[in-house]
Image 1 (tube, each protein chain N blue to C red):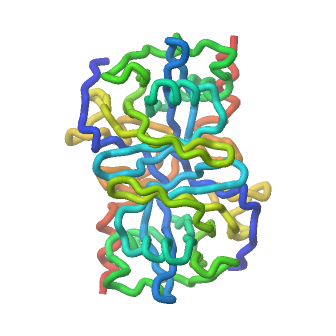
Image 2 (spheres, rainbow over the protein chains, first blue to last red):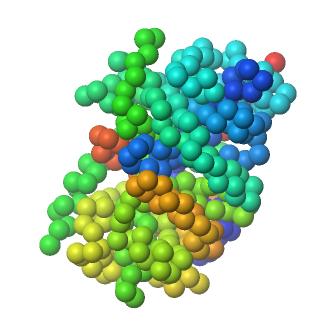
Length: 187
Length: 187
């Protein structure tokens, strides 16, 4: 077990959940791909996304709102496309069937199994990225994605990202039960 | 495609990368399980973890350092155990083969394929959780986990978490190439 040091810049997580971030710019919905995203507060529910200097940021700043949409594997190409072309140059407002909840600044994607509308709570400026923290205002899904009333990862069929190799992955097999499997180690 | 609203508190990501957060308390290493963790800045590399009011937090606050360790599937039970028992009551310092880089406040886990030592950059207080943002100081791994000089998700063999169903998942099949598969949608 010989440990070696690698570049700090190669510090990633394995794997990262893939999402599509939505915002409104000049009255139009815009979308970008993002995987540096996480739940950050228990109650009330809050989420964060850490974005580089993207066109999307202008919409979040202007409207104080954004959306986090969970695409399924069928949306892989469209998700990737959102990560390749900038809203500065390409109008992505017609790429999806867009709908809105109560926040006019948080465009939601009809094709995505889970859509989370967030009101901007605060923006933490980091050297390159901005860490946008949002209060979860509404979560939309469909009956067919639920198991016991909650979105089920196998029905949602999301995909994940690894960096810096830039590969997408499906979710694998169930390998354990959280807050349970460790009980057998209790003294 | 009939959309329904579910509880905002059921806003999670699918799936979330499972990690073990390390800190030092009273001169001893302590560890907890966490999945609300993300890279948050490109250069310099920065990571965040959003922790509830845990014993671990006291160590991060006191030493200005923490670690993010990526466990593999063989460590599932020990990882889960770290999430079940509090360092307030149980000494977890002997649970792993602990080593240190340059930060005495960031205990690293020898058994984990990837170990990230972070210097605390800032702590953002949210209603329940604290969002700890760290500068990545060192990343440790082993030759056997590398592919082209970088940690490879298939060699690392990590696992993920879904909430609120509390299940662990393996990483599945490669389903695409990021910043590439979407090119075919370019006009």
